[in-house]
Length: 129
Image (cartoon, rainbow, N blue to C red; front, side, top):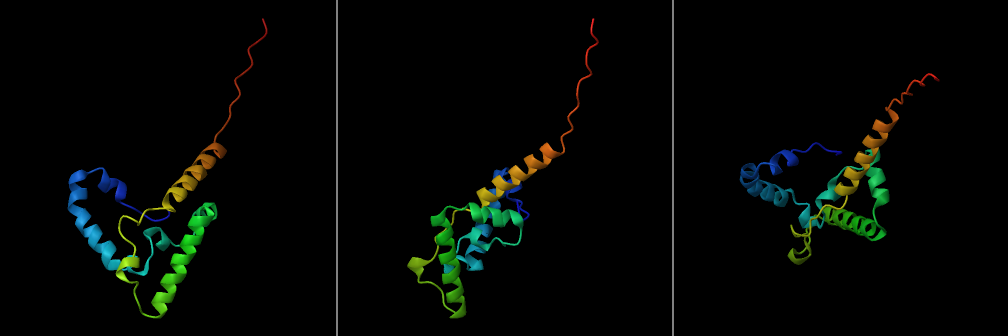
């Protein structure tokens, strides 16, 4: 993916996940992006070609919602305010919408790279009898 992640390593170990889950919840709450109405995928930097392509593939409604969340968060940041409690992003609403597209694009790029690196060898012709 576009950012390094240990999530797969942690998810495969239930004991480690149970131990780290409270810290992860605390960190997500302390970071404050939900208090501005943002989702975690809104924080992914748009600097790579993969992320830009994923943004182009977003459905129109999701792209509009993303722009709305970003503009509202920017306005709130400028005015040094937070959203009212009932408008803040709840943890169950903070679902990934961009990450699956990024993973799909990275898989396509890897497949394309593998296909371009493939060497085709012709079998020698059998001698005529």
